[in-house]
Length: 427
Image 1 (cartoon, rainbow, N blue to C red):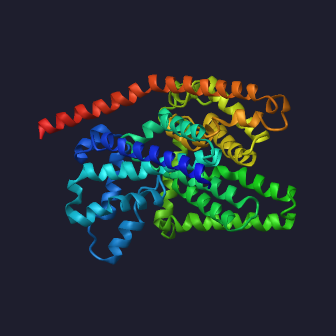
Image 2: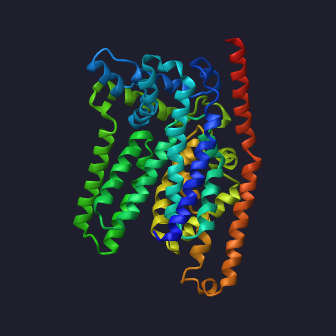
């Protein structure tokens, strides 16, 4: 990096730090006890007891191993619970077996370190990959815009969940593939490791099923691999990813845990496909039935169409063509799966799709200014107009973000404060 890039990177990191610190205040509330958590949260009361069990003093080494490895809740992969237990471990070391009396501190650490920090890191990675920190206003502007996305804000507030770790592991696959640059060396293998971990956390890694074949095919077209070498590299990638999946989920050695995993995931697949109430119109499949979720948490359909145009243009022209092609091949099968095969409609299911997708928000002007479009690239005034239009679109959508649905997030937080006050009066 040159001096300007380091300066721009500093401002991005500072923004991330400010955001991280600001989120401490809402995330320190609403969990003063496990009883209160049952009222203020839906998912956290289900997963929190498993972390408590992992950290509860063990009788012997066998019991300790069982608590830390055979954790029981196989809706999510072991990395989520392992890192969650590490986040709370300092409280356990300081207070011993009494650490369960500090629910608010424990949940604050879990929310900040497992939900907030990985998502901020993933966004900063994406900003760097798309801008290389070369332009201050583009770097800072894209960072702020991605921080403002309502679904990401909701992920940051009183929400301890594996989605941020999943997004970060997916992001690292892109980072390593780009760093590898079709050399098929150690970064290619690191991408396989990240992919295996992404599969192990929440199955998000399986949607690289188009990206990796495209990467290998490009290696042939660039005459960096022969067909025989492609087969070898494909097997190597799959083998390393599988090894990473198994190593990052050590409970798989246990036959009972494997059977429980299969049972839970089979039931979860059935629920995803049919919903919780088969006759409810909410559980209809297709793009039209996702409209409320997507427009509320990610933006107006016309804005999402603009991002789609930006991504397609970025795949054809501009300095990040290969990166944007990786993005397209990854998010396309996942979007198809969600739109046409998933009945339940939580916004966080889209985070692995939308975080890479939103990183292309400033791609269109750069792509159209490429040498293949001399009518634009040779006319600075047209370039400025194109940039002005792009910025206006982002500002308009940003204003829309500020108007809604932050009111819903704020109302949820205020409701948590009221419940907290009620509990304090009761107890």
